[in-house]
Every structure is written in structure tokens, then in C-alpha cells.
Amino acid sequence: MPVNIRSESVVVGAAAVISCVVLLGMGLHSQSRTNHAEARHRALSDVQLVAAKIDMYFGALDYLLTGLSMAISTKPSDVDANDAILRHLKSELPSSVANIFVLSRDGRNIGNAVGQQRQRRRQRIFSEGNGGRTPCGRSSDI
Image 1 (tube, rainbow, N blue to C red):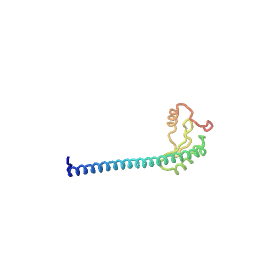
Image 2: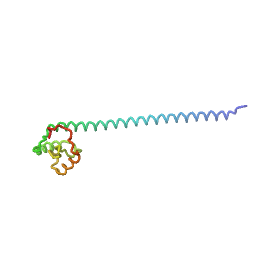
Image 3: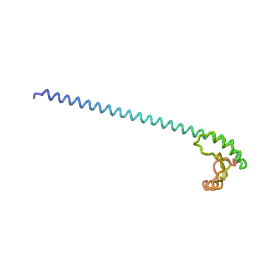
Image 4: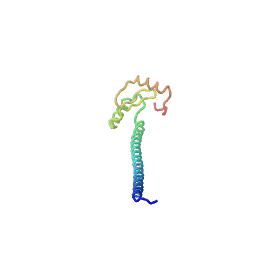
């Protein structure tokens, strides 16, 4: 059976087109996977950066509160001195810290950076919230 040159050209041309389409499809798929992997890596890096900043922020607050626990008196008679310390500290903190106040175990105010709050209401909320349990801490603190 004689093969027509024209039909051979069509078969060779179709094979070339099909192979180019397959090669192009594989290249696009590979590029898509690479772009997806890069975007995932960038997102993971961004999340790790944000987590590190949050960790540093709360670590600094923990350090601050540890030092503050040594500077603040737990005696109810020292409220005015505690208020002065807390006001000075609040002035140096970022605006994200709205207030700092210290309560005794029974909910009495023993220091407040912004001013006196409604102590009776807070005492009631505090005693309801802890359900009569003793919060962790040293018994000699208060």
C-alpha cells in the first residue's frame, strides 16, 4: 500500500503538535507546583515571624510583671504608693496596654494605673469567678 506523503506529513505534524502540547502542559504543571510551594514557604515564614513577635511581646510582659511583683506592696494600706508606681509604668508602656491593676486574693484593689475603680463590684465578680478557691501564689503575699 503506497503511503501518501501528505498523510505522513499530517501524522508527523500531529505528533509534533501533540508532543508540544504535552510538553507545554507538563511545564505549566511544574511551574504551578513551584509557585504553590514558594507561596506556601512565604506564608509559613510570615506566620513564623508573627508568632515570634507575639512571643517576644508576651515574654516582655511576663518579665515586666515578674519585676512588678517585687516592686508592688501587697498591703492594702499601700494603695497610693502602688498607684503611683503603676501610673509611672503605664506611661512608658505601649497604648495597647489599657490599664494595670493589682487585686488582693479577696478582690480588693491594692493598685491601679488609671485610677480607682468600682471596688465593690469587682470584689463580687472576683469572688464569684474564683468560686471560693484560693488562687495560686504564696499565702504570705496578701
